[in-house]
Length: 240
Image (cartoon, helix red, strand yellow):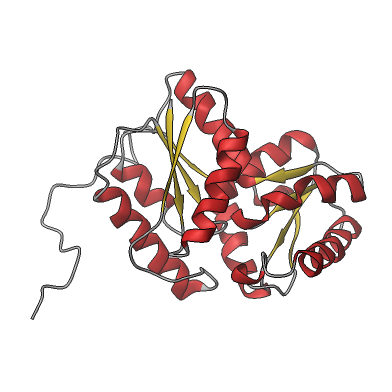
């Protein structure tokens, strides 16, 4: 089984970190390939970044020329694009936001998302609403840290996430969801310190993708995710 994991930004170091987390979660025999968009934002933090990222990820998959793959994992928490990718490719597409929330709903009645900047909360809330899992979300809480700040000072990052996770627990969360693909390394520490199940979206998406492939299931072509209409599309601005 081969899974392609798409980073939502152009930072290759983050792609490597995400790919490492995906490989750690994958079953023996599953090959994980990480893809970095050739253009777009260096980190996705806000509506503009998110829409640019969605187009860049679609373009990356459209022009992919590597070995055939069996599933796509989209590693942008709360970012746009998953519906478009489901139209574009003929394999299962699992978004880490949706995957983490679905697993969290199996572990407790209420979950909370701990993410990076507060400005990302609206996107995450909308993504959960579209996925049909928003009613179980107790809160989406920001840590005040930017995406590219996470790896710079591990002690500060850990402290910020513990503080935010504590607020999430007080808001009634029974399960925590890590709201950024770059947070996978914090899962065990938070679970041990807080005594709550903690779901990492990358690991959740990989295991769900493996399950869909093993069951022979893929995206329905009836209705909303029908193949795109045949028409001329300009993907880039012609050179002057």
